[in-house]
Length: 183
Image (tube, rainbow, N blue to C red):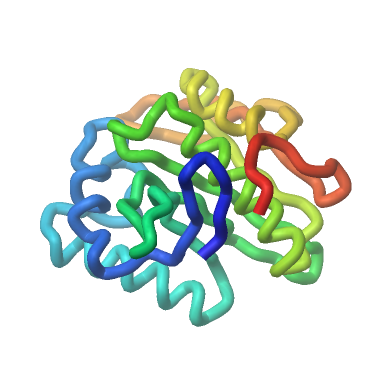
């Protein structure tokens, strides 16, 4: 468990978080974020099990951003680094928060702490993330977590027959710390 300040911690996902995962992915804007449909507690438990398997295989690392109680607290969202390329020291960051946690700095503090952890523990040098250009909230999270805008990837994503441009951000280990997270 990593204390990230503001009453929050990063911790691995646990089976007891299945209800939180199911509720989060039930939000209309979240259903596209899942790697497969999440329609039941069993689906959510499999989602959590895949996060644990990825960590065990040393290919991706997902953390619940949770309220900091003695028992590890209630999960409010997810931060993850995946597509880890150890040859080049690069990883891809993703994040989401449950609707009730949005606008409270949960994702930005989680991403800043995740970046710090990935640089120190995984030895990565560069972290990248992207968001649709029509998602200013996600852009604000990335900037607050110290990720710098590098450009736009034209029509990279397609949802429901519509193509979306994606703004690419990156953060380097040499950029220093950002955000309020101080793990």
